[in-house]
Length: 188
Image (cartoon, rainbow, N blue to C red):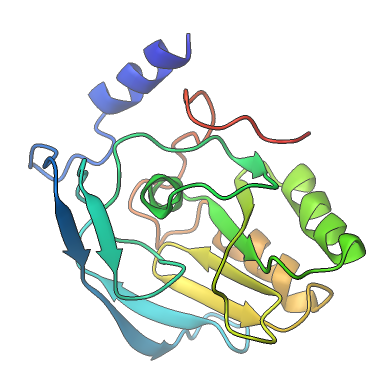
C-alpha cells in the first residue's frame, strides 16, 4: 500500500518541476540566507532555495540542517525518531509542507520528550536527532525556506514555528502527505 501511495503522489505531480530525477554522484544545493523572515516570529531566517528537483545523488547542502533544496524522491514518514534520517529524504518532507525539528544529541531526556510531544500533537512534524549542531543549540526548526535556531526547547517560538509553517505557503507542495512512505517507522 505504501508503494501505491508513493506512486500516486508522484503521478499527482510531487516534485514535478518538469525535470526527470537526476541520478548518482554528489550534487550541490544552492541555499542562500535572505535575512529575517517578516512573518511575526522573532529569529526566523528566510532562505532562497534554488530547486525542489528530485535526485538520486547525495546532496551537499550549503546550510545544515537544510531548509530545502534538491532532495530524494522518497520522503520519510513524519513523526518522532531517536535515530537520524538522511537529509535528502527529510527535505522532501519539507517540500510537502512538513516542519523538521532537528534536535541536539546532547538534549536531556525531558527536553527530548518536549520534542516528542510536539511531533505527537502535529501531523506534519518530523523530529530527528541531528549530529553536528553548534554547541548550545538545542533544536533547529526548519520548514521549506524558513529556519529557527533555539538554545532551549521550551521557547514558545518553537510551537509557534510549527503551527505557522506546517503546510505554509512557502512550501512548494503544501498539503501533500508526509506519511505512507516505505521509509521510516516513527516512535508513537
